[in-house]
Structure formats: structure tokens, C-alpha cells
Image (cartoon, rainbow, N blue to C red; front, side, top):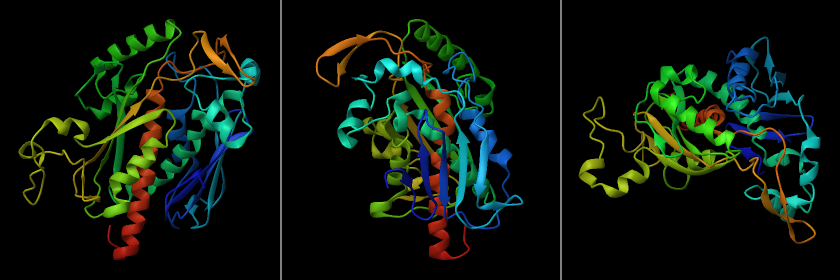
Length: 353
């Protein structure tokens, strides 16, 4: 069940980077929601490769096929299968990697776990697996919008450059999906220098859910914080998660970080919209640390399956910075997690939001 996430709104992704296709099976989507392929395609287009000079140049249309569970634009309440076929694989680019384990990748751990691996583009551990997540998230967003929930996100740090500005109207106007037009230029320049050096660089993604009602999530073991942590850390290349004030609160006092509530609004949001594992009516704010892409053009020392090492340059088409394509994935996982929490709350309290 390692490819399945969620309890009531359950998604199972499938497919490999260089296989016939990738996609998702969704179980638990209630009937009666209006959804069109265009709703799904819009989000997949934000994630797809080949968008700009600072992403991988693999050319995939990522055209979605809704195979089941939707009839005449309405969800049936039955399992929904969505498929995206791979059309631009260049598996020969990975022939030199068949007998070596790339540093930073899951090559070695997959081989030790299963005794076999798909070396083409990372197989199941490739970022291409996230196509299914984005498709599922698009479906969740359609449902969440009916109760006033809106999800936004963007790149707020690249390398050691960061921004505190959050103008979400700017994120789709620049290549890095940054909510600060001025910072976006600096971010892109740094990525271009890194790309030209045949290297990669990491950053931080922030995703925000606005309009989330009070009461979603559960206490103790199934806190919404914990579910969000699991959701974000399941995304390839993520290595850390902050909610609200996150690690920055460690240097502050309680008098500075307690979110004062006057019965109508909050004066701050250090809790990130969650108290005791349950949404408190404030914005749900999550930041995700994205490591530098592991596939780089520089020759690297690699372990051989049969023993010893050799220096190999990784061929193929790769992202110098994964952040702009992780944004829609992180938004999708936030949507999926909130959808699951909403269905649990409906089961507990009936028709309440």
C-alpha cells in the first residue's frame, strides 16, 4: 500500500517514468460533483515538463484520460481512474546507468529492497510519479471550492535567496512561480547560473489553503499537522516541512507566538491555521524544503552493482531546480489532505462544512 494515501479520500498512483504511462486511482470521491477534463488538464499543464528553459526539456503533453467514475461531467461516487500516457521517453539516455547506482538517487535502496529496479529515469522513484497526485489534487480542488476553500502556492526561496512578499497573483506570471515579481528575477538568474554549471539547486515552496472552516482534522495520532507532514514528505525530493511559524518559533517566546483570537479574526498565524491537530479558521500555511535535483550533468563517482566505482556523467533531460514544478504537486497534496479531512468531518458531524 506504499503507493496509496488517504483514508476516506484515497488515492493510489501508478506507473514508471519510462513505462507506458502514469496516473491515479481515486476511491472515495462523493457523487454529484461537476468536473471536466479541462479542470484536471489545467493543473497537469502547470506540472508538465518542458515549460521553460529552467525546467527539464522532456516534451510531454500530459494529456489526461478520465477512464472511469465520471459521466457527462459528473462524478458517480465510484472509483475514478485517470491516465496520462508517456510519449517522449528517451530510455537510451540511461543505458550507461544500468549497472551503477547514482549518488543521491533511490537506485541503491530500490535495488536492495526489491532485488530489481527500473533504471530508466528512476522508474517509480521519478518525479513523473507526481502526475497522478496532481490529477487527484485537481479533483479535490473542484470539490473543496464548493465550500469556499482556495489553495495557492509558490516558490519563496531558491538557494540562499528568499522573499517575504506573498502576492499570489504573481505566481503564474514568472517561470519560478514566485509570489514576488522582483525576487523571481533573482531566483531565475541563480538557477540559470547553476544550470550553466551543469549543477542543480534547491529551495522552499509555500502552499496556503484559504477559507478552510474550523474543525477539520483530528486530535492525537491523526492530527492534520501529521497528515500534512506525511503528504508533503511523500513528494519526491522533499526533505523538510514547516507549518505556520515552524522552526522559526524556536527562537521566540510564547508571548510572541500565541495567536490572539478576538472571536472574529486572528492577529497572527504562527500555528499555521491548525490548533490541536484541528483547523482553527485561519489560513493553513505549509512550507516544504526541496532538495537540489539529484540528476546533474557533472561527472560523479558512482558505485557499481558488481563492486567498485566509476565516474559517470548522467545524460538525459533534468531540472536545474525542481521548485517551479513542485508547486502544483504540493498544492495537490494539500488539497488531497484537506479533502480527506473534510470527508471525515462530514462523517462525524453530518452535513456541516
